[in-house]
Amino acid sequence: MNKILLTWLAVCSLQVAAHAADRVKIGYPDASGSFLSLPLAQKTGSFQKEGIQADLIRIRSTVALTALVSGELDYHSVLGPAVAAAIHGMPVKIVACYTPLTATAIIALPQFKSIQDLRGKTIAINSFGGGLEGQARLIFKHFGLDTEKDVKLLASGGMESRLTSMKQGLTVATLGSPPIEFVAKKLGFIVLAKADDLFSYPSSGLLVNTKRIKERPDEIKRMIKAGMGTNHYIAHNREGTVQAMMEWMRIDRDTATATYDGVVKTYGDDLSLPEDGIRLLSDEAKKNAKLNREISIEQVADLSLLKEVQKEFRVTGR
Image (cartoon, rainbow, N blue to C red; front, side, top):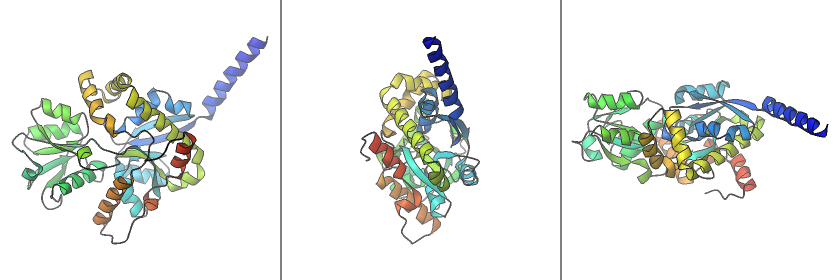
């Protein structure tokens, strides 16, 4: 009788847990190596462990930010555009960072040997207003070029479309994160520069409406815990991550392995937001907005809940 009662109680507990799970909508721009924390949190059960039922929605950052403010989206994952939005007064803030570095590379036709050789040429990006455009500006700036004066950026869609544009001679170079480097080399293209060799650039993480920080702090902390568990999995389970990439990104094993090797070092273990990286994003957003006033980190990020979780796990933020 006791055994039956215990079994019944266990079943009831599972039903209550499932019923009590918070359902959230999370935006992401594309199925690339920079956003692995989200699908892996589903696949490995990190979301479920924290009582989260996540719906992943592929969406452009410009649309996602509006949806975040209106409440149609609960979380977004692209940090660059978020900084610009916060500076302009939108009620959004970064609460955690999955990737303090970005593995974005500039891919070019083989006749171009340096970034300076791209002066006056057309460069393909996915869309305007997203993270890739911001990374393009910073990479070219590092080499003394201005994307408004010295090169022309052309919105050309996803990775395959951008590489096709290069093959057709419509553009001479593009940017992207793994597996673009691996695919591009097979097509005879070359890599001119990689962002993670040049600067810290927080590219993916958790972005929320500021109202949610006040209204759902426990949920946000559980989202952060799920992210920590997932990033630990990425760092220590190569085979499992490669398999997940094959399924989520719909790529073969060789491509997935090359992608993993290209992005694994960009993932942070404690979801800290690097100060130099956020300063870089803020300065770039200030310049584009033609602002002279100082922008504090607190204006674009609220790391109080992250610090609570780090303290709970005895993790020291970097």
